Length: 239
Image (cartoon, rainbow, N blue to C red; front, side, top):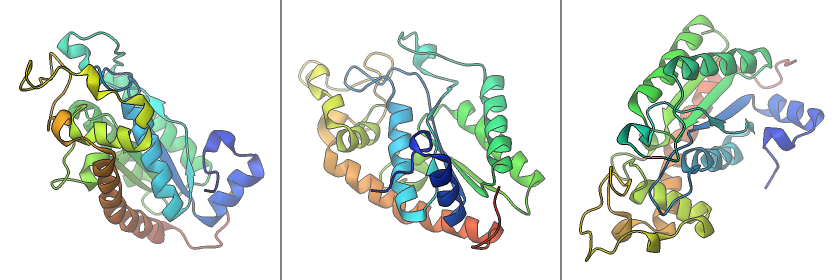
């Protein structure tokens, strides 16, 4: 697999990948509790790996994950979370978009692994505004990953969807045995167990994670390629 992680690239490698396909992937997550069975960085590390999968098919470079989330599990009284002001989320998004555009990237894909609704709307709003201001040369696609897998495989919080991604990408980081048994707790809850969605004890698996990835790629790749075709011609000059 070709190295596409920005932080590992040398300048010449970075520029070469940009000249081949000026698509910048920006994984966006949060510091957030994802039940007792998943790591606290689930949102960001899941989004980063999904960006890597996309970049293998479309070209481009994957930037380091952004850990800056609003609307985390902190609102449910849970610890192990950092919640940032929505204004900071918007400022960070706008700053990234401007910097990436100045670097010569024509398509910016923000893969949101954190699903807080106000958080998602804030980044989408900044993406829309930035694209409107630079419509002739920039496309910004900013979506939570579940947009490309729903309704067949819907998004959730630490339930079958997110847990399956983690079981596929990082099987050693998931421990379903930490969840209470179905006999003791028939239905898992968002406040008590941090699980919202289809019960991962029944439905989560590495195979489901693989199916989610395949569905996401089948829908996102054509969209990203079409966006690039609107604003860039191969061989065009970049800084």
